[in-house]
Each structure stands twice: as C-alpha cells, then as structure tokens.
Image (cartoon, rainbow, N blue to C red; front, side, top):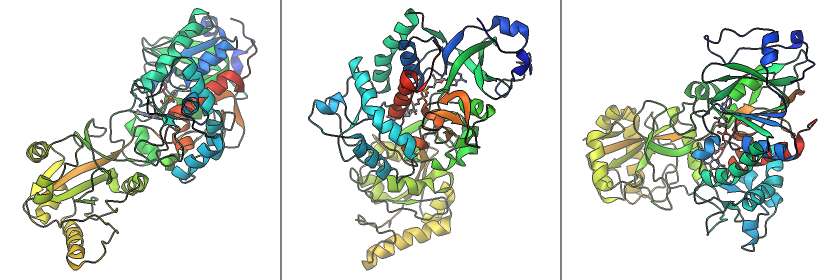
Length: 509
Ligand SMILES: Cc1cc2nc3c(=O)[nH]c(=O)nc-3n(C[C@H](O)[C@H](O)[C@H](O)COP(=O)(O)OP(=O)(O)OC[C@H]3O[C@@H](n4cnc5c(N)ncnc54)[C@H](O)[C@@H]3O)c2cc1C
C-alpha cells in the first residue's frame, strides 16, 4: 500500500480496547504501517442495515471497499428486525394505484412524532426512501399481499405506504446479500468479520485516515481509507450506556448483541458529539420474565383498547393512576408510561375481572393467568388492596385511594378522574390482583450528530473530515423522533447507506 502519511502526524487513542491490548502506541510505528492493509475508497464499520447498501453502491461506482464487522456474520439487526419500512413512490404503491408523495410522507412522520424528529434528516430520508425500496424490489424484495398499509399498531399514516416482507428483516437482507457478494467476487469489496473497529486513525488536523481493527484473536491491524462510515448500530444491547444516555433502564433483552454503542464512542473520540438523549420513547409495556434487567420477554401486554377494552386500572409504583386506560391512541399511552419511574406499571384487577375477562397477557388463557399468580414473580395476589400494594411493591395507601376514586366515580356517575369511558365494573371484591408490566424498546434514541450530508460533526459546527455515520448510530430519534414512527429506522438506514455509497461520498478511484 502507498501512504504519504508521516507517522508523527498520526494520533491514536485506545478508548475501546481492554487492558490486554497493551501494545498500542500514541504514534504510528513503522512495523504497523508495513502491516497496514490497502488504501480503500471507503471503510464501512458495521456491515448491517446501513453498511451493506453503502458498500454495495460504493463498489458499483468502482471504488474499493472494506467492510468490517464485529459479528461473525453480516446483516446486523436485520436478523431480528421486523423490517417494517415506509416510502412514497414505490412500485408496490404503483401496483395498487396508490398516489403518494414524499411531502405527504414527511407531513405524516412529523405529525406522528409531534415534530420531534430532525427535519433535515427526515427530509433526506423521505425524499429518497422510494428509490431505496424500488432498488430492493428490483433485486427480488417483495412485500406481503395486503401491503402497503397505513399502519400496524402505532399511529397510522394517511396513505398506505407501510410494508414488510414475509421474512421481515431477513427479506431485506436476502435482497442485498447477493449484491454484496457480487462486489466481493469482483474484488471490489473485502470483508473482515469477527473484527471490530477499535480506533480511528487521524492526522494532526483531526481528519480521519483509516481504522484500526482488532479481531477476535486480539490481532490489531490498520486500514487506510479515503472515507470512513460508522454504521455500527445503536446501543440497545448495552444496559450501562443506555441508562447513562437516556436515564432509564434497558428493560428488555431483544436488540442485536453487537449493538454496544462502540461506533458512538469512536465518533466521539474523533471529535464528534452525541445528541438525542431526550428522544427515548417506550413501547407500551410487556411482561418480563423477571426484574433482572435487561430481561427476556415472557409475553406481550394486550393493552390496545380497541382490541380489548380494559376493565382494570393501571398504576405506577406510587400507587397512582397515570393514564386514561382506554385512550385510543397508543402514542399517548406510551408517552405516559415513559414518564413513570422504572418504566413500570401494575395492572390492578379484582377476582371477577380476572376470571371473566379476556386475559391482558397476550396469548394467555384465564387458567394460565391464575397459575401465574402462584408461580410468576411479576404476578401478585392478596385479599385486600393494602396487602396487594405491599406484596407488589406499590404504595399501599395511594393504591387504595386510586381504587376508591375509580369506584366512587362509577358509583356516583361522576366522570372518571382520567376521563376514562369504558368502566363496566368496579374493583370491588377480592381476591385482588396485580401484574407488573414494563415499558421496553428495541432501539437506542441518541447518537452521533451529522449534517445533511451525513458528515460527523464537531460541537463547533465543523465536520470531522472523511468521517460519516448512518443507521441507528445516529440515534433513532433523528428520523423517528420521540415516538415510534412507522418504518423510520430501517428505511432511513438503508437509504442513508445507499446515498453515501451512490453519491454523497467522493472517491479518488
Ligand atoms: C426486534 C427489533 C425489531 C425492529 N423492527 C423494526 C421495524 O420493523 N422497522 C424499523 O424501521 N426498525 C425496526 N427496528 C430497528 C432497526 O431494525 C434498526 O434500527 C436498524 O436495523 C439498525 O441498522 P444499523 O445499520 O444501524 O445497525 P445493524 O443493522 O445492527 O448493523 C450494525 C453492524 O455493526 C456491527 N458492529 C457493531 N460494533 C462494531 C464495531 N465496533 N466494529 C465493527 N462492526 C461493529 C454489528 O455487528 C452489526 O452487524 C427493530 C429493531 C429490533 C431489535
């Protein structure tokens, strides 16, 4: 390889390696330069949802690409993502005669997330999402027969533009994988798996010149590139970082295990900064196996009042109700739960409700529910409301007050204190029951700050030269806002990766 870099101009940091990787130096020794691999047009850190299209399009333009992935396989979160995507102007809409525009998509997104997403990046996403989906379609991607649709649980779009394939995220991976392999066969894409980016190589001006990697055997290697893309995903598998960034616990164990936030640390170490810590949004509760966060899921919570009008009340750890339980909008209920300590709520019912209603634990029978009160650590049963509060870890006096207020309003015909409409019966006759439900998420919402060309930015508003970021490393909040906006993570990840490889990056081929 050829390089004109003077070793004394290069700075190295060791933020991401453990103590065992003690060979690192603060300069760039000659032996490492000799071992450094080729000069690439693009080095992609993380060959997942955003990294794969970036590599594919860059290689199609004739440059050489190196894809580094800490996991033993490529694809990242697509192995488990629902792969629900959204775009205007797709072949799938055309086939059904649906007229749609990026403007309408933009307006819907900002309405759904209450203008909490980044307007510049949302615009970049919606203006180019149709081309991304059409590219996938050209390469064999298909959506379900009844798609596109307006929604799937969260606030709906005004137009049918929401869709996913039969194998969810894997359907997207299967469309991209052959294209990436084509680049490998053509000698344009090199792939290093089980290899993590450990450091960014910068010159004395801070411009990024390459990446130092470390493989699973601890071997360090330097790689030089004209452009470096951080597409290593978020930190939704890193409980400590999640708590630090968002101030709430990471409750559910569901994200891709390599979503450790290392790309964010890399970007920060090169001069970038993080935004979006306040954009955390929770999903509306689920039954965890236990309180050892992050915990696997036991079952979903059937909290949608349109499918199952609730008879129970929901309280927080203080014993206070905090939401109108039958409010039709999921986003409103999610936001309310997101404000409760520990993202926890307790579903409170009496014996009649518990034994005669459709269970609120998704897919469970009444018998399973009743067994849960004998066996499950998140289920509680007592003969009085006060005893129930003590057992469940909820303030007993306030819980009793909440139940009394709910009952008294029904008795007197007064409006419910939270405006609830559906309240066919009181919480009247024991035994009484509580089940802990916990808010959860699949993504992390904060991430590296970039400009409209996806360049990693410094706090002073200047870019870190040659360094780009795409995907969840930007923080889910930039395109989804403080909400779950339909398809607003996978679609922009693919789109931003594609745009970088196809046109935003310059290569001196
Ligand atoms: C269960 C689940 C369901 C979801 N459903 C949807 C949905 O329906 N719609 C939607 O829009 N979003 C959804 N999401 C979110 C969405 O899938 C992700 O935000 C998106 O796939 C992330 O793409 P990415 O390219 O940023 O990261 P990934 O696809 O995770 O790729 C990152 C890659 O970087 C690698 N990596 C990590 N650290 C390093 C390192 N130091 N060096 C080298 N490589 C590294 C990882 O191994 C990985 O391969 C879901 C997420 C989950 C977990």
